Length: 339
Image 1: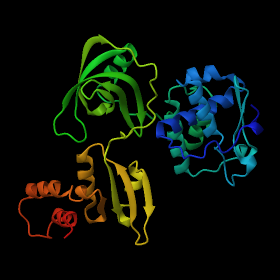
Image 2 (image 1 turned 120 degrees about the horizontal axis):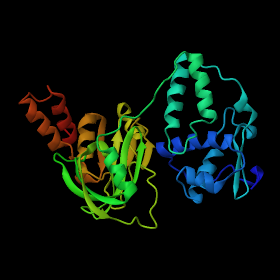
Image 3 (image 1 turned 60 degrees about the vertical axis):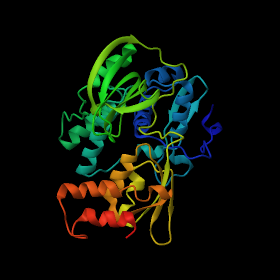
Image 4 (image 1 turned 30 degrees about the vertical axis):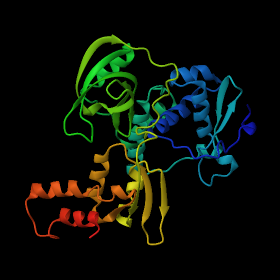
């Protein structure tokens, strides 16, 4: 498929691109630049993708460009169905002037990209970073993600397709629970390591943060991954039957819409931001509302409007009795009860 045959707007529906996907695409581009005409099956195997997933990534590559984002400022993809060549716009060849802080940030980000599975450790990205190191006077900069205690054990069970038993302390629980899981993906996203697995305790697919695993025990039982297994693309995927809660956020709490996966958001005339969010665990919403205090108000469903009252009272009890209004948590209780 010639570049002119490939549509710049690839979908009429918005697509959420998780951080792990962005990292992979950023590692994919320099590999393709260094290997014009490479076979698609080779690229797919190198980056652990199906051909359909690779095509989806190439659609996103078409959207990479530089200001002023006119027709000649984007990367083009020459795809004949079997081979891929990236055609870089002339604007990508212009010299870039960076401040020392910008250069160091770029160097750190580039080093992190070289750790992405499939990245070419000896390709153009590595060569450019070596030059940047010299220019900054920062040789041998090492960027690594701290590995959680049980990462190797989880990875080993995934590679061997062996079921393991874990003690897991979830974010919404006070005590660990024991679960038997079949790991189907191990990946890093947003600075944390995760394992996607079939959980026999929950009888369904679940996502576990590896640093919250307190113990791993082998079972010596093998499992067969399902044929229709989809890759772990998002750190959080709400279930269809999870409750949906609508919350009004005052301006100081608008950051919630950027940090959490809200499903909808609407700016209101009074400056509030109305968001709709899926709640898998009630404890998550309790902690969030107590943290936000009077800057957040549950609109619906009605039975969730006082969800933060009891947690706020427990917090007050830890501090001992205090006159109403003299303690921040007291104000939160009043706000939650509509006083």
